[in-house]
Amino acid sequence: KNRGKITERFGLLNPWYETLDLRILQDINFPMGGRTSTIQISLDFLNFLNLLNSSWGVRQVATPAATSPLTVVGFEDDNVTPQLNFNMIDRTFVDDISISSRWQIQFGVRYLFH
Image (cartoon, rainbow, N blue to C red):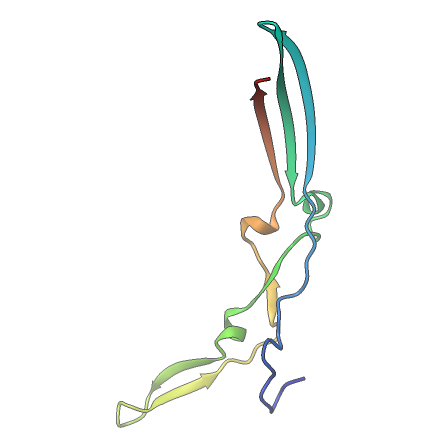
């Protein structure tokens, strides 16, 4: 929509994505030395939606060609003036393959003194 004109500030933002974390926590109480102590056992599912469906909870980021549309391909005869090439792109955003787009499971144990 901004082709041929100057875009407004912050006119292009990364697409919205959803992530849902789930925690299952169990307290185990037991007497110790006249007091009650507690052990907490937890199981955390990070990006739980991606565990259910591989296309859910996936971030999208701008492609390098979208953030840097010009590349230097050489220089003019004076070795000062660069020759630039405009990168035509067909997709502005691609799926992020980093760990923030993947599901993870974390197990935890905590001892509480009372």
